[in-house]
Length: 138
Image (cartoon, rainbow, N blue to C red):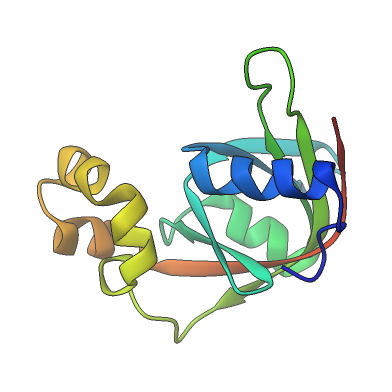
């Protein structure tokens, strides 16, 4: 991940991105108010991939303003991570149940939430890619 610093902090961030189950994706509402929502995510090359319901308000927010942050909660009192960047909606992306890394990380949870991988894919079909620009934390 070229956007991560080549340092102990960068390696800690990479580990947190791999192990964290939930991140808080913050978009900007129409009135300018930050709108944080919990999301499942994976890193995919130099970007972060998130799937959404087609009626998620964050998709409307992104259409107006692509600026986002993804925040990872503290981990045993440390490893707080705040990533800022730009997001884009991918209308032709494969469904989450067709993305091997997403299924590897969330497959059992996907089944628990929706009954099957395919049902989850049908419920959360809209992919969003986040291009990180900056990371901070400790």
